[in-house]
Length: 186
Image (cartoon, rainbow, N blue to C red; front, side, top):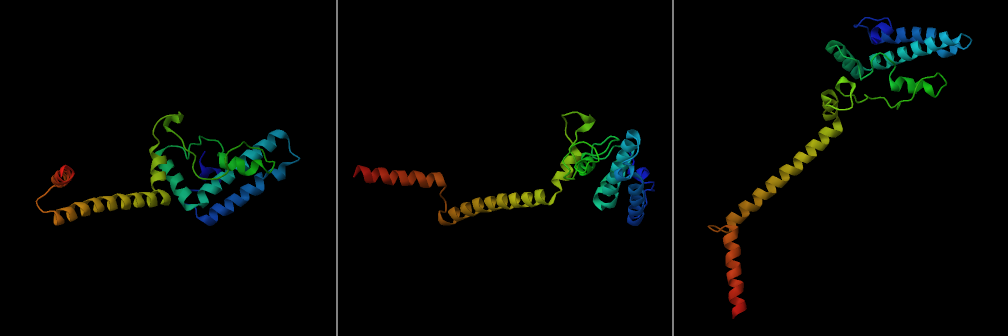
């Protein structure tokens, strides 16, 4: 499903054009306008309303639109939805009596694997995960801890060498043991 076609827009549409096109679609296909219609007409209007809502949700948000445009250039689908209505879009209206299936409704991007199977590495998902602010903060903190450990170890070695010239740690421990055994034997 092409979100631009759903709203009757070109790929260079402005936010104002997106809003206006969604308003027109919402007025035409809103389920409340088709309460007295046949079941077939009502189901089609619900589907078209959900598709228009999903298209608006993606195209009005700069980041989601950039991801969507990128996926179109790549020739793939967006977020793992192959022509249907996203779980977030259907859940958004399911509680209002407009039909539709479950889904989290929490937005974001569903995780998908290549080929639709349950296994494999989803590089796109990993890239998005690794570029989140929380992940980057955690990575920076782990780097600081590791760097601190390295500095502390080198500092201890340097201090040991300053205070015990010519002796290794093992030599020092050996001489301490010799002194102890002499004291015990006396």
